[in-house]
Length: 513
Image (tube, rainbow, N blue to C red; front, side):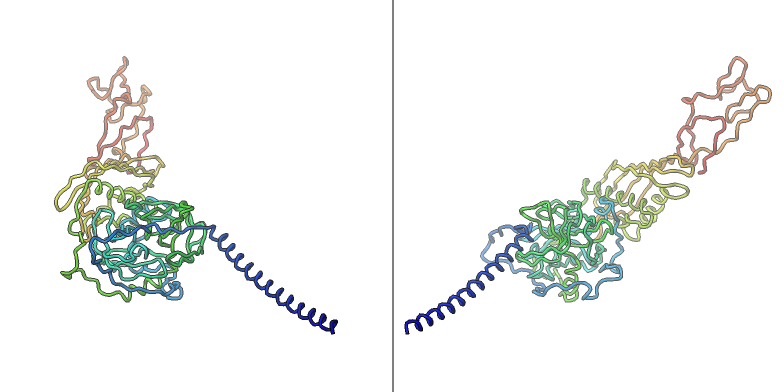
């Protein structure tokens, strides 16, 4: 019996040991799985702390009654990809038919000059960020964390004019929002591109960090597909080396190789501020287009609405006028270099005489045997008026002529600038005050003939008969006239255009005009 009891006890002990072993293995496997997952996440994220630039402590309300937020469309849906919504064209752009804007490429200065007329600083009662115009309805795309809980929204353009906006779409899950500004309806938007960019693509980020409008940084797309979570779900992100700062949120990320907008500058990293992240347009345009279609009518004429619109308070400022003309000339240079598009049209009032004049004097820099090389420009005077202002520019354009010789065109030009209905500076008239083209020489002269008796060449423009009283040159003791010294040559004018001095040569060649 005792042996049987011992046997039974032994059998029970084996069962208990087996069960305990199984439980230990299961627990160990579970712990291993959890630790491995956590380790993978830590490795993948590199212990990154995500920082939305505009996350700040909210200011204390000035009154017990807090102003109601703007009402718009709120969604928790996962944003649809463009190809699922059928909004991409054959070239990947989403708004090609809505804009006349043609984006410059490669040249950062030209990209900025062209884009900044459609980039805005966004202000709410809680945040300051950036945004950009995406359609002709006056809709500005920005981040949700910029517009979240906004009691009011105001956007400011490059000249300091402010316009009232209203949030018509904001996501609780994806960091994207849409603001409608009725006063910007009809204005040409930027060109959007919903095609996913490749790693290594050169980019330009534009925004208003620390309220500094039009600040830009350059970099490349370092990776595609970054994902992490904060107050919002971030997925399919562009990791970029273009540095972002507080206030950059919502600004456009531009593909420097195509000139089109490919993303929304969104977040920086507290641990790695040299790295930024942008939300690809391809990840949100389906959602944004849905907001546009379902947007309620926005009207600020209601007497109960506080007026934050200041378009009628637009003013002329010497510094702003000067910067406006410098941006115009940046696009003039890009147009001459490109040879296909008139990028500078964005600064000229539509259907004005200035368009025709600009075509004429700018076209002269790269036509009729001329090959454009460079253009220097300088603001020489600003005259501010009540309804218009004048900016005078001094320019030197360098080109190569048919004989591959370097020539210059020196001009003094006055631009009359007005403020249009949406508070933008626009060129209305252009007056070319003076133009001196070194390539336009004096009329060709006859080839000097050799005197068969003396073997000497008479001076240009003199009779072959000797005239001792002539003032056209000095005579040697034999009575033969000597050519004028180079320093005594006088300037020649043709058609009212001053021509540089040209020393006489034995066989002068005639340059085509």
